[in-house]
Image 1 (cartoon, helix red, strand yellow):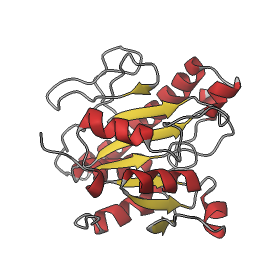
Image 2: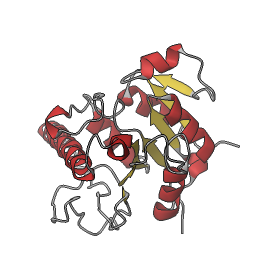
Image 3: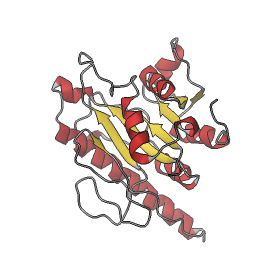
Length: 237
């Protein structure tokens, strides 16, 4: 099997505005330009994979069902942004771009993973067939509270290693983008290059000593994607 590069993405504060233990889909606000940025990654052969700590579940502050509801709203907003982008491209007479990998749920409970083959129709996270695949190839979350020893909770790289196994990812050609020191440490431990975005907690993180340090610092997810594409031929030794 040919391994593919991926961009691992923190969710809260990186793709959407930071909401403390977000349990309400009405509070989801996708950052402007996110869908187009992820589209550019998929066009260049990258899988986009969400890696998110959700300790609010373990702390009893939200349920797993609420997490999935928030995730579904994020996916919906990505589709909406992507639809608007497609209309803009079509109105300019540009050739339509093929569908990206879709989002598919599995039965493990702690992660949604394993996208369908490109020729297959993607599934909605709720299991309903959907004709508008999402730009996210897979999403992994860790519900463990910080007091519980966990190999999956960032900064530990467990979720990234799971994704690499599930999806056939070349970690040496991959990236991790996030707004917290735990994101940078997770990516470094997994063997990816790292980008700290200055959204969410990113400005605060950048102002403090961060070990390991990120390979790059970017204004937001749109700027982070530019960094990835400008350095796409570089491979970590």
